[in-house]
Image 1 (spheres, helix red, strand yellow):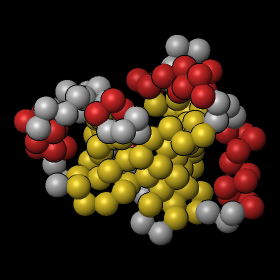
Image 2 (cartoon, one colour; image 1 turned 135 degrees about the vertical axis):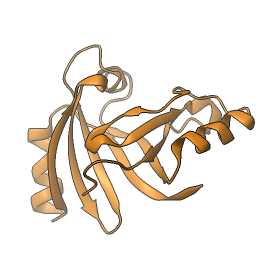
Image 3 (spheres, rainbow, N blue to C red; image 1 turned 180 degrees about the vertical axis):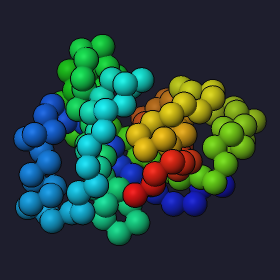
Amino acid sequence: MITQINHIGIAVHSLEEQVPFYRDVLGLNYLGEEIVEDQKVRVAMFKVGEVKIELLEPTDPSSPIAAFLSKKGEGIHHVAFQTDNIEQQLNDLKNKQIRLIDEQPRIGAHQTKIAFIHPKASGKVLMEICQPGGEEK
């Protein structure tokens, strides 16, 4: 079951250029940065109430974020919904014949289990299902 919006992912060319706006201008609670090797991104996280803003900078030209930036430019990349049981959530989606990018969860930032729903199944919006694990800030 989906319990809340966990974060909104925003693709950016440069964390150095964008972090000051979110941290210093908007005054959001800056949680730090992390590299997610599997997804070839560097991530900066901010907290706003119970929701996080995740800035995503590609670390490699073959990164999905690099491809997104070349096609669409900087902007909202995905919305992530939180669940208590990602495996059950994925099974429920499969049973409803929802097209998935990830049939099995993988590990994202902060050791969170993640899986993506294909945007063709969700009105052209890339959606992530996530189950926090490890250090959830």
